[in-house]
Image (cartoon, rainbow, N blue to C red; front, side, top):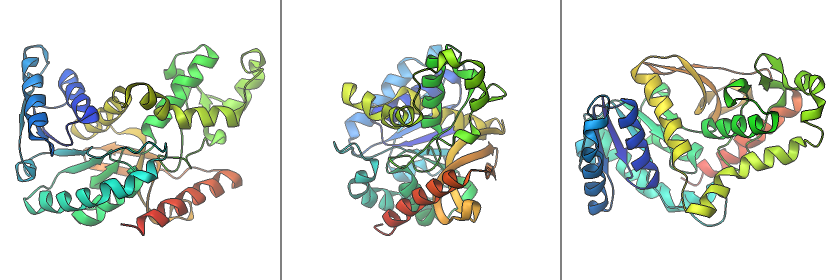
Length: 308
């Protein structure tokens, strides 16, 4: 499998390294506006090739050299200091629009996985600029936020993150929210589990917890200037789902055409991902309040899509 990376910064480098360690790619092609950066990343990956299960090789190139990739991860971009991913739109939209057209014109016909923020808006832009069918353009969306939910809830309950079936829905940004009606501890609904174990949740506040999950990425960013490991593993879960046809269900940003009463927007909801990309969009039975929040999140994304 040939993996292309547009953006060889903190996210791109760890996506590549994780793909190498997991054997998710046979070849990786780095691309970046900083030529020295992409050259160095390729050399560094190659220096570890003896230890990768598939002996992954790396190289670098221009946009046209990505044409024969099976999957391209879009992870270029600049990050503002405001703490709101939507503020990244003006910084990133022009470059993304230009290079997506160039990559497609060169002959690329694989799958786009979009990480660049604001993720939902940029994923919509990639969808429109590429002209690809909706199943072949996938935003990382709230997949990472959902993982953060599981990790943070597991810490409170004293359980493994694998025992938590949690999620964040909507925008990968400030309007994302927890659909508490859909949260389970193993197979037990969260509200029922709370009644069974009140001692674990005596001081628990749902709104406070949601806010902490929403802010988790910025908490990491403020301390080290990037987030890498969580998103790299998230992206590789999507890559593996496509290349190994795992039919995994992840909360990714996908094109909605009527689900939740929302149309012509990319937003996160559980999706089945396999060899054909997004193979099923799952519409959850939300409460009236949750549905309202989902639709409000969609309206925020639509307003920013108008700025493209």
